[in-house]
Amino acid sequence: MMGPVAALGFAHTAFRPGTGEAPDLRHLRGGTRVAVHVVEPLDKDGLTNVFQRLSPESRHQRFMGGIARLTESMLRYFTEVDHVNHEAWVAFDPDLPGWPLVGIGRYVRLEKSPDVAEVAVTVVDSHQGRGIGTLLLGLVARSAAKNGVATFRAYTFATNAAMLRILRDLGAQVGRVDSEVLCLDVPVVADPDRLPDTPTGRAFKAIAEANERVT
Image (cartoon, rainbow, N blue to C red; front, side):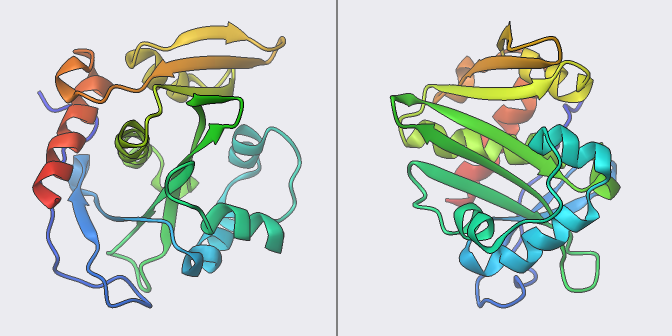
């Protein structure tokens, strides 16, 4: 049986808007196609569009507070990264006009604990439940492992059942920040063969194997 993400390969059959680069095109469960790429400064408009398409509940889950818009300084921080201490992957829908950006996953290394990085994933409501979040998390994990990160730290509401399931599938240790928010420490595994034999672990292994074919 297939895991949450069926990384069935990649194909350079179309080009990312605004660049001459071919994207990495993945096929997910249910026939969903998604193109992925490391974040670039030109993704500011796409990220703004993602934020505008998030429901109030999704904004609250991601930012844990009332943020009305992404400021210019926030957009620079989110898109102008060094790809070592701060990395992000973005996902586009190649089957919609203009290839809109539909999700982003990132890690940011903690300055005082360089082997730990805070991690977060956001997917627009219309594309949730298709495996895009798992794919982005897996890609971010592969990048983090290559850059010496051993642990992801994630903060989420105790009511975010989908994220809790994914992170627990990866062996997360769960702590409580307060009555509503949990802190999860998740091992970042460099060797795909050491991933747990769970739905998310198997999905991460498929992502790692697809990345090897790309590179």
